[in-house]
Image (cartoon, rainbow, N blue to C red; front, side, top):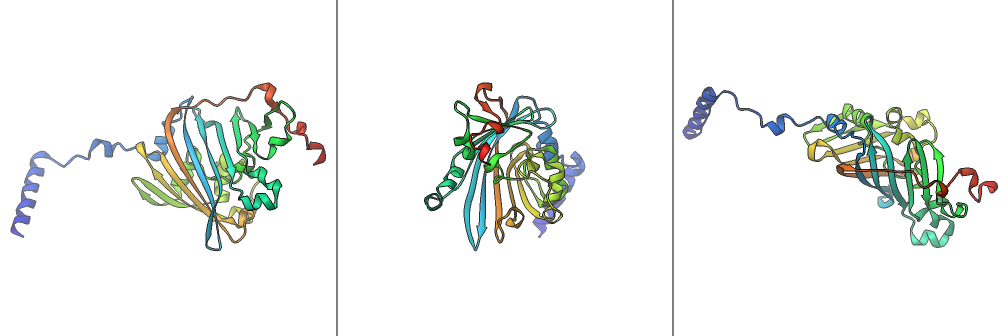
Length: 273
């Protein structure tokens, strides 16, 4: 005990002579996650991502969809998107219902200047001869996009909403809850696959999320979980896991060649629908 007291006395004397200990500059200047994200909003720069959606039902977990892509930034946020995904259609399902095999084909989506271009997937066989892309106005996510991560921490308004509602705040991670209704108000990414505003009941659906931060306190991994009841998968739990990498890398998303683009009314099966 005397030795411990002597150490404390020496420490006190040193503090009196040198003043209070300074906080390491790297820690003192660690940016707020939202400020760090806004610092990435440079035209022509962006981030890459991968996400996996799982459905948990009856105690069993199965991968439902996989997706990967790049997000291009402008000064105010995400300005363009290039992503590819596919649903996990089992061989048994393909054999019993051959038409569903189309859902397991890769589907690519480009979003440039608020116009979306879809290629492959469910619409691949319906394209007119020589056409590869289906053009549709606004931000559209296609079939696979509707099954991917619904929360995007690379959207400034979404990240702000998450941080505001965080119930756990640590230097390298945050966690909390947000409802469908709250997310619908702030997130174009969330609104894109819905097609319409959530009903009053759907708007109350709670998403439980966890966000891990990486270098520079930028989003590195986001997991989000909610009940499947609001998305037509009653009795199930939906879990979405997204990884963000390559912050600040060069990203350029361009529209496809004009002669490869078809409009919805040109699809071969348009008359039969």
